[in-house]
Amino acid sequence: NAGVMQNPRHLVRRRGQEARLRCSPMKGHSHVYWYRQLPEEGLKFMVYLQKENIIDESGMPKERFSAEFPKEGPSILRIQQVVRGDSAAYFCASSPGPEDTQYFGPGTRLTVL
Amino acid sequence: ELKVEQNPLFLSMQEGKNYTIYCNYSTTSDRLYWYRQDPGKSLESLFVLLSNGAVKQEGRLMASLDTKARLSTLHITAAVHDLSATYFCAVDIGGNNDMRFGAGTRLTVKP
Image 1 (tube, rainbow over the protein chains, first blue to last red):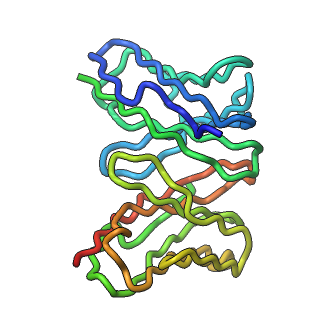
Image 2: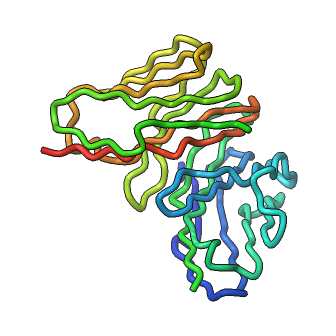
């Protein structure tokens, strides 16, 4: 059983461009979580999704950031008009149910030039 | 506002020594996680503590949870270099796997 997969692993964007980060949960997992880790800091929760639904987006910035988890395909975290402050590692985790342990992907490291 | 505080944030130990990392949190929760993160890597789940008084051990690491004190500890026994990593605690605040993480404790074990 493959683990949580994220791609790309590294992403470089110039200010003003869009960044799309993908997360494929483990097989059988329908709950996906996105976290952001700024350099030298801990993880910060961004959003929790279950197939086609956003359950909790309390950690998402109100502008430029959006997330989806369609019925088919990976979850996507989309950042529009990136700024330097968006440079961070973005981790996705998945779980089979709302009370099960989350398993983390390898992360996508976004660098904004 | 929910706070999850770890201390110390930086810890340098000699091999063979014992030490404890603390995780305090400010809201009611009966589910707490400990993770390990190596530089540039993702998080590895170490322990899940599900009830007051829970204690779990794996190798040189032992974790405990006191939900009344809102405190978890991660105890390191006879540290070895391979334990060098950053350790995060995370608290499930909503019973819906809605987790909040501590800032992490960066552990360095020196020969």
